[in-house]
Length: 215
Image 1 (cartoon, one colour):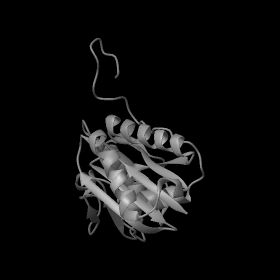
Image 2: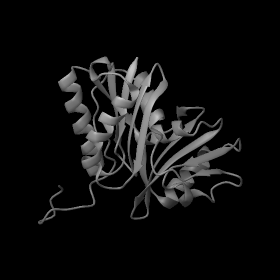
Image 3: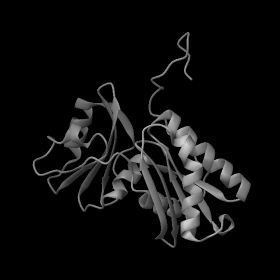
Image 4: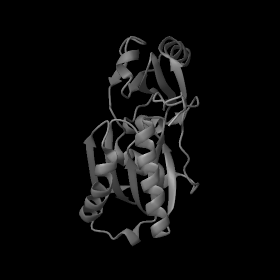
């Protein structure tokens, strides 16, 4: 299976092409805005590096959130448009799931994104399996939830919010990744059912139009 994976949800614009789980091309640039200007050219470059035509793709994977509202829309719109043009299925990958998969760890893995305003997006995994649904929580509540799950068998905290929870457990492995590994995103996409992606919004957007209307 040849899969194209895209991530524009958080702190990077990333693209990967995998064949049966093995990377053919991986490109990633740190950025918090400007994904729309870079994504198409990065996809083209990745496909060129992979040496496969777009027609050879079996599916397209894209991160669906939580993350930047603008970034999510860019990635989803591009993936859906490309999938429609090629007649290929498009599947969604949760950003927190992809963050956890980016750092294989045998114990408890907390995927944490700094959601600002004293909140974090949080999801916990044990041995690769989710033990809670993704949620947006005040920092104190997130720390308490994580402490309930921690069984003393080792813990890794990964994501842009990792440093906010570094005092949770002595000896915790802290990995402050700004974005998931695009290879992890693409491998997850390859393993998922071919269900059309939907954005995962855990809270309303920060920006408001005049009159208090959400954009």
